[in-house]
Length: 228
Ligand code: GLN
Image (cartoon, rainbow, N blue to C red; front, side, top):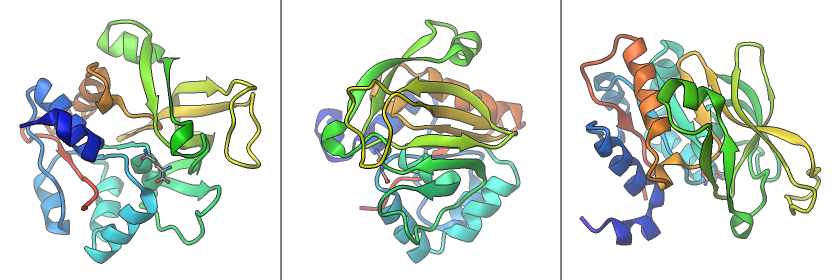
């Protein structure tokens, strides 16, 4: 398969299955609610959260997704996936956006601005280094990325980010403030950036350990990709 070509068309899909394969895990795409019964864990990738919500609504996925989260099966949301898992989303164009919820936080949907303001930066994640080894830093790839503004008491902050004062952000967002970019709440993992676009599979491995911790070791991890 020509991953080079696929990356430009659909980076999340291609990078995600590749990262999982590197760890010896087979993934399946979830398109129907009943498929969720056959998988042990779920990755909700990046994309565009309102489109994902519309498609999830159209395919009647919301009840099954909410049940999946509620019963404590491991779920990892990256970027739009994070927004989709949040209890509350704020920022421009968030009105009426349906969310799965479950992750006790308020997320700003386009905190880091538009597509052209996307950026890459080394971020510090002590938990990743202690759990998976390697350096404490991780290459964060932020694509039209959200940021978490507030978390509830059950949420463990895995990484935060101080916005440089010269960074242009979406209107009405203050620079030089500290935001949260990676969290865990029990069986929910969420990252504002895209680990699947790096060759470093430590986040994937961390998530697979979460799956093992819940005793769900037999089945492979699965992923939900936005239906094009
Ligand atoms: N900010 C986007 C949204 O609202 C998410 C971008 C991404 O997933 N790379 O859905």
